[in-house]
Every structure is written in C-alpha cells, then in structure tokens.
Length: 176
Image (tube, rainbow, N blue to C red):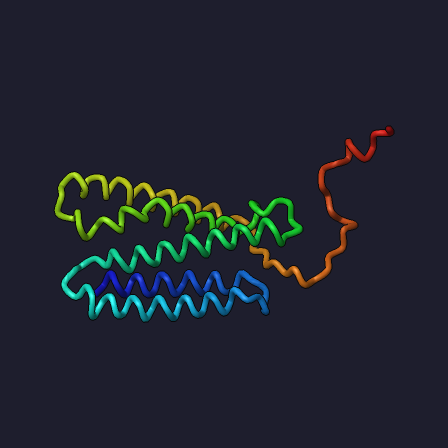
C-alpha cells in the first residue's frame, strides 16, 4: 500500500511539473490531464483488484515509466523544434526532464522485474547497485538543474532578434 501511494504521488507531481512547462493553450495539457486521470484509475484498479497480495506494484510502475519516458521524449522534441534559444541545456526545465528521462529509463526493467525476481539474492544485490546508482545520478543532475534558470517557453510571443548572439562574428566580419 505504501509503494502504491508513492507511485500516485510521484506521478502526480511529475504531471503537475510537466503541465506547467508548456504554454497556456497547448494541446498537451489536455493529454497530460487525461493521462494522469487514466493512470490513477489504472493504478487503483491494479492495487485493489489485480495485485492485492503483492507488496511492490511492478506493473503500475512499469506503466508509469513508459508514460514518463514518452512525456519526457515529447518535451525534448518540443524543445528542439519550438525554441529560439540555441542553448536549451542551460535551462532548469531541460535538466529536470533529462534527469527523469535517464532515471526512469535506467530503472524501468529493474522495477518491472522486482515482483517476479525479488526473492533471488543475486537480483537483490544488483537491484541495490542499479537503484542506488540511478538515484545518485538523479540527485546529482537535479542539483545541477537547480543552478540553472527556469525559462518558460512561449512560442506565441514574438521576440526581437537584435540581441541574438549566435557566435558568428567571424563569418559576418569576413569579406568575400
């Protein structure tokens, strides 16, 4: 029961963070809300009907991981296609998304296999190594992310290009 409540809370906070990354009228906001609602319903069904006797909710965490990987992938795609900032890697939101993308990708199969292989001593040893390693990497990347500025992307707003520095002084100053 405790693991399941952690899964609900974790997914809810990630969806809330992800919801506020996009402009006000972006269609992904409806997708995020629908996905969040659908996952909560699925996780409750999994908890109370399907896997009542298991302590670790591997199946729900597997579905959560797939959804988070897809959402993180979409955000990275959106950053590449809709931003005028050439250095998106300097922003807080980029590093938070990359952190969760790496963490969820690194622990996806580990959490999926926990129900079926949790009694194996070798699996427990590898579980600790992989889980601790992924958590350390996640914490380091999140600490790095907190040193970056939070920039909200607004593609509807027109920007001025007079202060845009592309680092092309050499090309512009050469005479052909």
